[in-house]
Image (cartoon, rainbow, N blue to C red):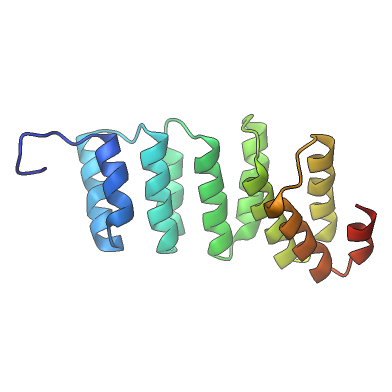
Length: 164
């Protein structure tokens, strides 16, 4: 495309990024910044995924901060990125910030956060999130159910599973 008269756009870069290795992905990111400002949630999320895959949390966070608009998938990607890099406590803070900004969590968000609480054995914090899930009437799908099972088993709170 570079050698033709066809001009690339956000969608082009969004499709190309998942096909790139990390080094070429950084070059594509540099070209995106040069050609136009990061204005698309889909493109930004793909950049987050690329940096997350390479465990480059600083670059992922920079992309997130520079995004003009962030959707739920973008938030979930960065929260997962922090969890994957062993910084789940920051991911939990992002979860709280997401709520403050009015972005409504989904089952995947809750599953990431609950798994992080299980990893850190923070059962009481997790129970607050579990209570929130129940109060909001969110259906306990397989992601949330598995995360709750993982959490309560790791933290020896089997009676909670029986009661729910």
